[in-house]
Length: 197
Image (cartoon, rainbow, N blue to C red):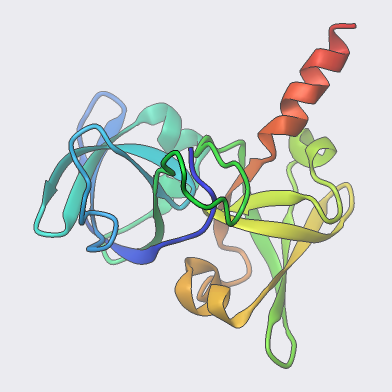
């Protein structure tokens, strides 16, 4: 479980096709690796990955084909920057919202509108996820907990403050770039419970 508060920008330093529809990724992240052990979870652009090794500020993780197909991790290259967050612990502050690190879909940035001190980003919204996205609700974009400013059947917008622009990959992405989306898990559970009545 995560909170969607990015701890640092990491860098992909190695990607290895492991055969059999999988890959191994190595990411430099001195903050998130400072106490990481084998088996710990680290969110990489919103995808929960399991640490298999941690040496000198670089962790490696296996990525199966399902994850490569259903997230934007398959589009990463050596040198790509990524949002990193360690799993929350009991007693941690919940600065964002409850984030599982289970990507629900991939969207693209439609446009960016700069304001005086912040920016509005508009994203495509997969039709299958539209019912879970509401104005003033929470959504996770590339592992960042954000508040929805506006939404329609095909897109949604968020406002990014200077800190988010500076300290996450969303500050450097362009129109057309893919992003990982995770909708609020509580909405999905409520829908399922009400649907069974």
